[in-house]
Image 1 (cartoon, rainbow, N blue to C red):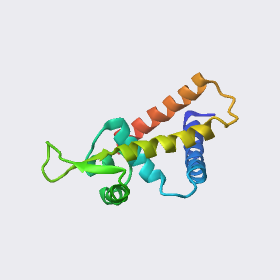
Image 2 (image 1 turned 45 degrees about the horizontal axis):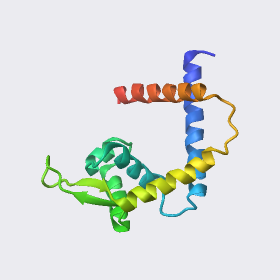
Image 3 (image 1 turned 120 degrees about the vertical axis):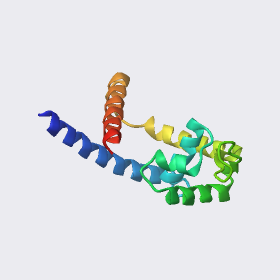
Image 4 (image 1 turned 90 degrees about the horizontal axis):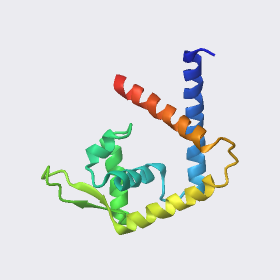
Length: 145
């Protein structure tokens, strides 16, 4: 298989996996308020600390307006709060609340329970290599866009 054909297959399999992950996440979270978008915002805040809505939007392929809608829902649920931003007076920082941290922990726990049941025969090293390949392809695409 040529490198180009292999990359095309990787892209097709990645898209198929993305769609299957969405279905699985809906099942794990039982179509509740824990949507992929909201989960993504919570994970970003957990990993990167408080961020502005534009910063959160730049990290994903969605508009600032879409992120604002997600943040508004998380604010209404008490999972995030807006704190002062010393670098910008009008653009506050979105920050996880204790409630948001607890909700994220519960989401991750449900997901880990599913992951633990998957009958995957690949070794940890093989899975890590696959993840690194996906990371490098994403980085290459980000450089040209």
